[in-house]
Image (cartoon, rainbow, N blue to C red; front, side):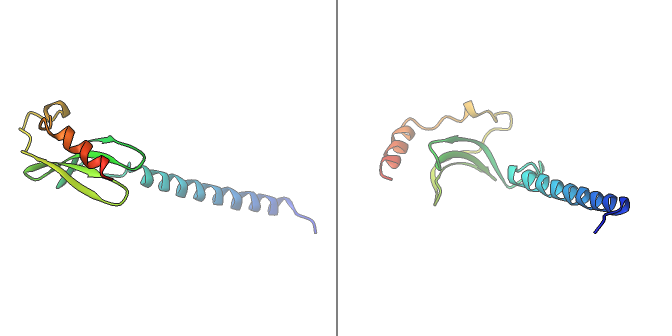
Length: 114
């Protein structure tokens, strides 16, 4: 069985096309997995900030309509830790969001109970 120049060219073209399609699919999967396709429009729920507490646990500050919620998030559940009043129009920095003095004690108590 001999392969002519035309068959080699066709084989090279087919392999190149398969490679390009696989590369496009891989880029699409990475883009979707990384969350780069999220729209920046108005959303009903906005994550202001989050802080990791461990491998699968973190705290998130979330704005929902007229309230800001401090959520404790683990691999299996989401718990409401505290509700804050809505942020003022010019104040969106994380430093302006200081929890009540007893919050740290309450959080450590909850985390020890798990």
